[in-house]
Image (tube, rainbow, N blue to C red):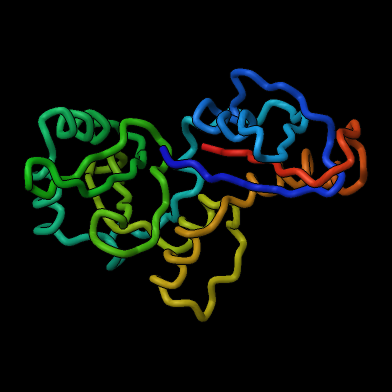
Amino acid sequence: MESRLFLVGAQHPPQDVDDPNSELRPDWLQWVYGDETLRTHRAELPTPPIPKTDGLDDVVEQLAPRDERWWDAERTKKFVASLSPVQAERIAELKRSMTATYRTAYRRTRNGVAVWEVRADAVSGCLRTARGGSSKQAVVKLGGPGKKLQVRWMTPKEYAALMGAPDYDLSGARTNQVLFGFGDAVAVPVVAWLGENYLKPLVEGRFAAGADTCSGEAVANG
């Protein structure tokens, strides 16, 4: 799992609040607040939303079975052949279902050999910029009528939806432009939550006042 770190400076910071075992300020970030050469503060923030553990099916773009973006039989066969026994059993079980479901997959290098790994859960892995085969994420459709297995690259619309911008206008942008843009972006729900619970109250002076001096706040999200 990757994290994003937000650094916010304030001329009139809120009162510093000790925040042990914080989801927003994990252990690896605590040294910042213990450094006496830095002026820092920890605003009192609510518990963030629980990370999603499913829901991929809701954001997947529904492509027709014969859509050209699905990989052909030869490429799909190579995909399956690269799977470990555990991975192969995982997709075999899902493939037997009469209800279609989706999983994401990444290409990894194991012992010098390129292999595919399919996630066990119905969430997406970290989105990355589209450079190199291992950075691009694949979508695997399993089961449903005919109990088939189909594989393709994740689409720009899916990148946008996973980043919280399902209605973003992608017209005129090339596929790799969209993947680079959203792969380097920050998820919309994360920024919206920080804006509502930290930035807006900070600007409006709704936090308890701390020392009248400039200081910084560091918040991370996983």
